Image (tube, rainbow, N blue to C red; front, side, top):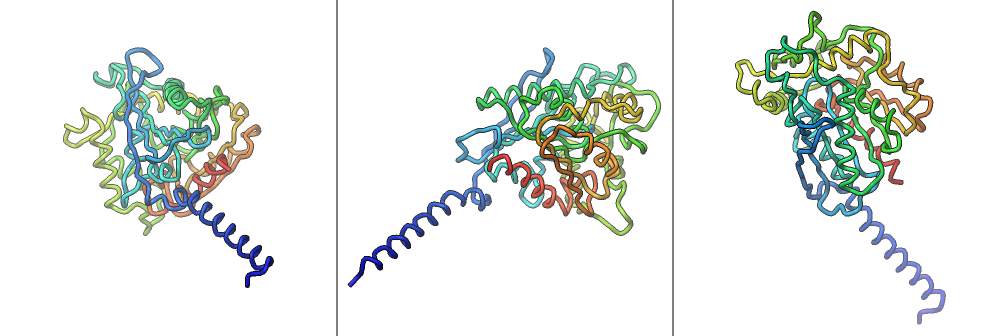
Length: 353
């Protein structure tokens, strides 16, 4: 015969099982992202100035129905190559964009004018020497803002999380310093700051409207800073990146050897600001949670840059500085990329708790 005490224990056990089942049902989509189906959409949106368009790509899970400031992320690229051939580069079946999207995020990338599938300024269709450097950081930040406004309107939210790589950190930090109310969190991967060493993107001499970069030059630059005997980027991964990247320029893809054109506004900014000891923005004007993350062997934006910038973020709360071992500026496509993904994900997920 079941006593009242037995019945009470049975009810408690049943309730506990029901709660466990409910908890599993709630958490499975987040903890088993490999089962999710990812939806991809592409857009051409107006740039910050008339007559130009920006390429925007969106990835998200097909079951994602709620959009909040805490689950929307917008990535922007660095000084030379487009966003999609890094952030959405498929290596072993997954990109960083996929990784974030599978965890319940609405993830975007944008190419500012002059890069990837976005419009190129007219100066880039003429010999470089005929024009002055195009697409400064200020211009890029305004283009980034156009993409932010497009996403905020599309999802009906007031703000989103901002993520930039290399020059993209100057773009996003400048944008954030002017638009804190539209930024939920700021992630600066390989942050740019005042330079004490030579820029790897500036070869010296007069600057035309743009520069051209070959695969050989890209391989040499990606090897900068790596200790002898180390090879953080498998050769097959470099080849996958190069195939995607050097197909992204409709002019350079037809050349032999292939090349990409990259606007020189960023190089001019380097001379006028970062190498001249003049910040392009005031870090004290950033008033949102901020993460700085880079790898040990980064020769493009060495560790001293992040270490100098970090204490100047006096109004960014909380703030975090993370250094990953045995990686370079391009750790996004290296063997230790999983550490980059996980550390940034921890920071992103804090906004959803």
